[in-house]
Image (cartoon, rainbow, N blue to C red; front, side, top):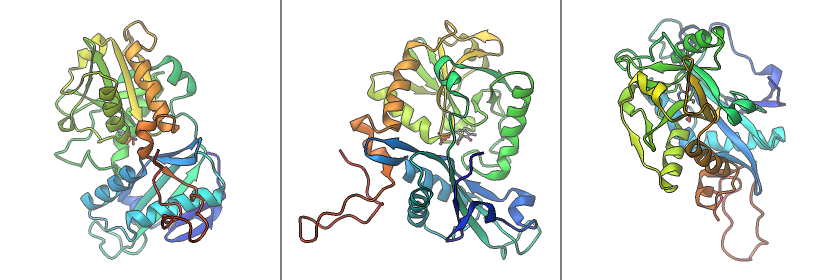
Length: 328
Ligand SMILES: Cc1ncc(COP(=O)(O)O)c(C=O)c1O
């Protein structure tokens, strides 16, 4: 990975190579951590973080679901993130906040171990490759089922849960595919190993519902809204495995991958094999939203750089530095 200069750790900016933890940190042993994947884009108005508040809210909810009281508010984590990007001099980057049970006590009820928190930012290109974004990826239905809500919490973005995604991803990569698609415990389609999934069936856009053990993706939400605003019907319903093969179009959404068409699933060609018209249409608008080119979605972007302060005495009170939202 490409290093940045600084990492924010428990309230301090520390050099990248010095951001270390004790080997007996609880999270390392039991996966007791929650995290986010967020992206900052270079827009015409400067670097801006896509749906920052939604990601921070999900981080707080994941922490709550796993009984990990966060030592900082989401506002503080948000401001630390903006400051970290500024200090690292980055114009666009991937952002990884992680809160985890640290070093202190072992065992499964280690309430006296601290909750440590860190934020790292670094340049990271398209997770499934630029080729994948243009021409689509090949995916394989995994033999591993997505974690069941009977045993874990699919709605939380928790570190330990990713062993499930890693098994699926490894299996598909070893078999020569770019991504895995997991079914839920009932056998209905759930999502990719790190993305939500959408199909086009009879001209309608279809995506698995919350009860199919999905992670409630921030980009899933954005794409549902964008597609509806473009006039498409979007239906959240259970999807049978065979519908993956019968779909006219298919695509994945996620922060790391962005919107990636799927051109083949289990060696069945999806549609005509090249990304379809609806996928292209939604993808283009989604890209506009990410890069601040769509006026109607500017409110989704959190600017990193402070706005110019008006000269004192001139006009209304300036907003707090760096925490203002981009408005049109
Ligand atoms: C398992 C899983 N599902 C779905 C997603 C997509 O979520 P988002 O759009 O919030 O990045 C991710 C990525 O965070 C993920 O890891």
